[in-house]
Image (cartoon, rainbow, N blue to C red; front, side, top):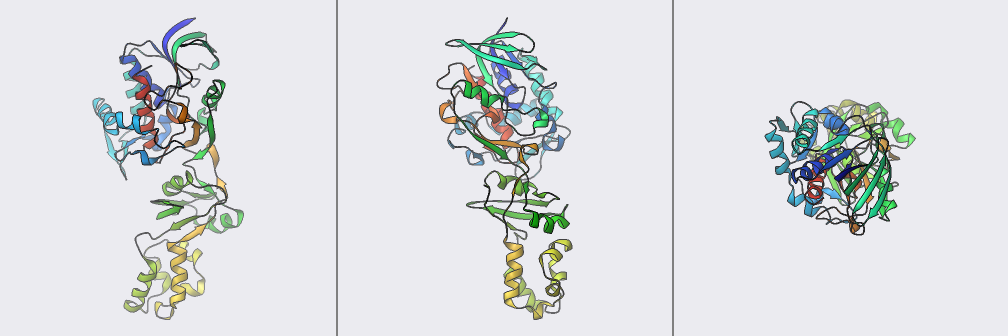
Length: 393
């Protein structure tokens, strides 16, 4: 049996960050992963360029049954701290939109950064290794049976992620370990995921597949302004992915496809200034023709503004400024970027990530009931929670 001070299960963003910090403290650290590569989800993130953090991270950008839990870690390891690490490794990056930071070249740059730091810190990484059984032997000692051999450690860190993108090896492993030790797990569901539509709406809107529009998508008390993308399966794009984390089955969402225009007032003003202009030629200055043709009656499309009634203007404005639709569901974990729900934060220390009732057992990253917005927030949670645990394990 091989002995380590710390064993981390999961060679993703949170696990590698925790390993680096623990290794810096001269701890003997082993990272185990069943995959054949470290950081697989990092490699495919951000369209291959890794949206590794966001300038504007605050606790309000995260969803949890314990909304205060993330505050401690996020305040102690900030986006500026990770940016400093990126600069140390001379990785060029840029801000895309809304504070989102991406590598100029490739996601592999971030994985290489993490693996280099692990090497500096003396961390051992074993891939293609499945954990088959975990046993607690004493107050602060664990025995792990794996596909390779048995290991022994004083601190065990679960950084195994959630259920999103099962083709990348996602599994409920972390939740099962929590339940093994009597730790509550909140129900999970796909988040940051495209929405599917009921058959009638899907058939109607499928003609718009491939069209993206700047929009404000609203649900209850929250709204996001980014692109909405129409697809053959339903609705996607950043604004839809954001709202999917808040949407519940049976609820409707509202899409404002002209968020920069009060369309009713704009049409009334245009009626006075350009009375001979046709409705379709006026609206296609602002939205794709295919979209206008789908939403408006053909007879209304060819009318001049002069003969359109204010009631008709109101109908047009409602369709384009406040289009309401009730999604059928989501595309599920197959295309979800993250998992909502997870290990109950009420029974985990927000300072150390240690389970209150199981000394030596830690949970970090996506396996916890902390889910960030789209745009680098979930990576920042991985860095911050991994860093916090790495200071103490």
